[in-house]
Length: 396
Image 1 (spheres, rainbow, N blue to C red):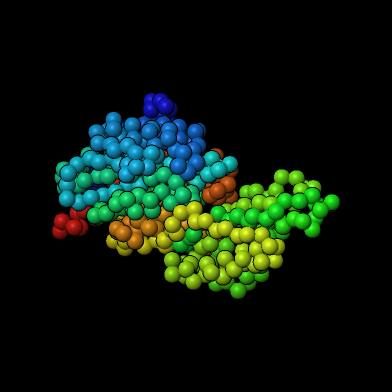
Image 2: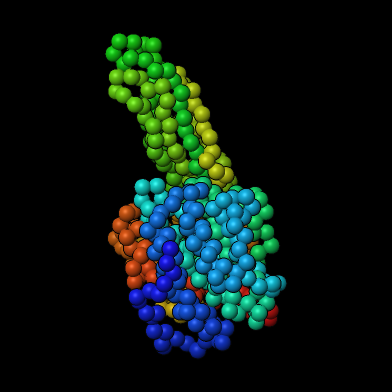
């Protein structure tokens, strides 16, 4: 990957309110590293890697931080596509989360290429003021956000403990300050039946496909009685191989979302009974296997959130508060589990993509180019300024 200069020049930063020397140093550092940050984002976008397979993205992000003077631990806590990069030895520990996994079949239709680059940029710019603010800056490469629960795996191995602040900014169609994600569980569903010739010996088969059909009908009826805060959705990934053979195996992936882990635990039993109904009706054997531990709801730190909002507005960004525009803030994330452990924020940075929205191929196309690059540098700057504000408040 080349980290050469970008053909686009940094945005002219005129007309801002007077900034402290520390905030000015952040702006200078982001502008200095802009071409390398854009090159990182573009390279990750051009080479999408799905959960637990992000070897190139992980290495490229770690290399950029190493070149900026960070001490990098690869394969952090035994996860091959995770890393931890540290700069400074101060008493106030700031953690930046770099996500870089892509979606199967959709590439970077959630913009994680921008997350990796903006978190790296925020960390590098904070390194310029680490001594003055008594900071330790920690950038974490966090794999498998799109269903694999990479941050949860890291938490279980001891990561993030003792951080004073954890942050990242996620691309969205418009700017939204506060994350309010659903809690979510991810499950692999499998029915095992018995194959048979569909015309000659149908009575000797146990139709695993019928089991899934019964379950989906039951789920469709259940939705009428579910709270507005609950979402149940999924796909079949294996529905048989030939129309003249009764399917002996069907498989799928299913998500259950709720406003909190407590509500999720209360709802899941009703969902699983729908799948059990498929097994009961067909005679197939049901196996439900969690794909990760549940993602928690997000708990935003009030002071840091207010600071980020002000800082983003200072950069000229405008927050869209309409109900239709701000729906992305309900998307589940394993950053919710981090927020249960340490003070955290997870704002959304707008890339001007409407009508395209996250998890569409058209959104992926908007995650590179001038608007995306502006979002990248604004996110890096606003996150770094927020860390300055929180650290300064601690020292008052």
